[in-house]
Amino acid sequence: MKNIIKKLIYAFVCVGIFSQCSEIPDGYIPDTIGIAQNYVIIQRGVDFRTQKPDLNGASFPTIFSIEEVTDESGKPTSVLTDPVLTRTWKEAYNYETDKTLEAIYAKLDEVEAPALQVSEAGGQLRFTSGTDQVPGGTYKISLKMTNSAGTKIYKDVVTAKIQTYEEMDSYWTQDMGGYSWNSPTGSWNATAETGAVYDVQWNPAGENKINLVICDKNGTPFSWKAGEVILRGERGSLEKVGFETPVYTDDKAIHKYPFAPYPLQSGGQEGYTYSYRLPAKHVLYDEAHREGYCNFVFSFRLFKEGEWTVKLTFPTITKVS
Image 1 (tube, rainbow, N blue to C red):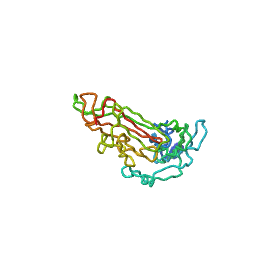
Image 2: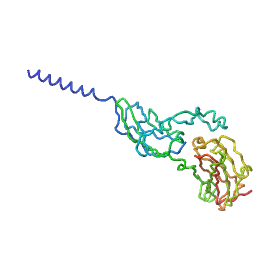
Image 3: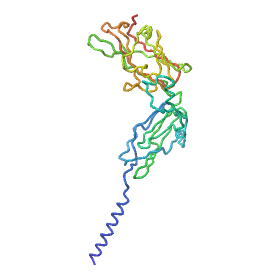
Image 4: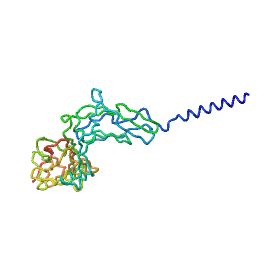
């Protein structure tokens, strides 16, 4: 009798264990996901993608969707998820071959699509150029993730500040320095002495073009037309990433462009960085130990349309005609 009771108890225990095992979910879905870029500032009309979130060991495959967007008052809004007319590329833009407006517009299309999109597989967010049609403000974004273990809602995991047209930067620039021969060190190097002073002017009512002006310490412009400013081989330049052959005059290089942001694409590994040279015969340095040509490098990208004048003045160089 005792043996029968023991066997019955053993059987019930086994049934309990196996029934509990059958309730174990197939896979794992975490309570939280890690998003490094949980606060992003979006410039209107500028395509932007966040990094992929850290899924904290979630089982693959995953399916992401946008659960909810709320505005500054905390109320749900659809301004980021409603379709808007968005400019998109039908084919990949190639700055090396697409050198005319016709070539560019042949690859462009306008489609109805949300300004906010999410990568279904990885949870990466994309803010499209359609943000130029979204009211400026701060929005909180909640995501939904589904996998074999179930579904979770991740509330307010990203805060996006959509800048108004007035708030957003008009342009971005960075002085990368000037390079000249330094006799004491016997090397080419960048120093503050050969760095340029920037002056960027914008006329929003003007034609879409960039006037690039290079001046010596007296404000005398170097002539692009006469070859007093030249390219540096295959290195990055506005000519390389531009869509039309520029016009060289005695005081500037004129680069026309179709629309902002511009350049439309970075120049490969060099990004939005441009390299030029002032030939040695046109350069006199204040420092006696400096000689030879001056290589200079700068970065520039505009975010608003109109006429731009980018002037670089070298405070320790005199132009020699």
